[in-house]
Length: 398
Image (cartoon, rainbow, N blue to C red; front, side, top):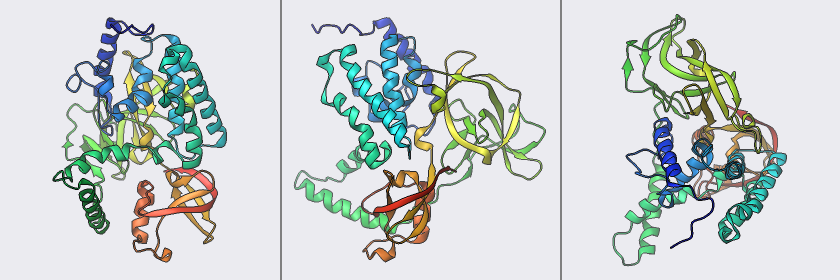
């Protein structure tokens, strides 16, 4: 049979990992497409070869740092953290050249250590090219700007467009062209902002002296969804507080929306190799405070919280929900504009939608461009092009 690798986990530890993955499934926010649980995978780790890219990304950037701890060897765990930290930094918009150099050194060390830990026979081309990611990010911007998720997500719709086995390429081109014409004319519906459908009375939900009815079981913002459940009730505030939401109510004073909850009083580093986890806003949080209220508008970001025991939760920022903007000067027109940081390409270039003055068949109106800036829309060759810019200020978070 196949020789067992020296670092292969015994069956009892694989079962422990399976159990951990199933348990944290209830804490995975609604923004993630797939959550590990007993209904989706009978043996999550044993099925790893069949995992989708979103599942692999989730365990690399979020759940892996929690479930692998105290299961794999210290050497393997710290090696995994090198890749985790580097990819999290590479997935952040508008990083400095110093951070990029640090990422490059991390990835180089990861690749060089790989053969020593796992063996030279596992040094595939996929492992080798990891060390070039920092250079790609320096050239093209955040990993999210040039990842293949968009193409993978389009595979199923593309297959459905082929009606017969005759001339499949021609069919695809025609259907794709029809879609482009249709969707360019169709106005994208506005995402509903505000309370979810469920409106609840106080019942067993806590309330503070400054709150009153109506109260809500959830709230949709421009970037994320909040719910009174284990998966979607953890947020980071502008003042740095990390809060577990227990109720969403109306203010007695001005009818603004308040969140009622408790903040973590104690925030510590979760790991200190290859860097201090707090530098990535990843913390081991404990000691919940007494009941307090905060303005809903003062929420900075939604976060994932994964309990490791009855007292401590690991708090991890959601990378794909973080948005920031910068102010740039376009060299060709001498115009100043604020743009999402995911439109920046390196330090001196920026993608921007086609304007009427660009003399293109397809151009976008000022209102359409404003919506794209607000939503931090992804770059694409159909709607815009790259310009030379000088960065004036930023980044600024909303």
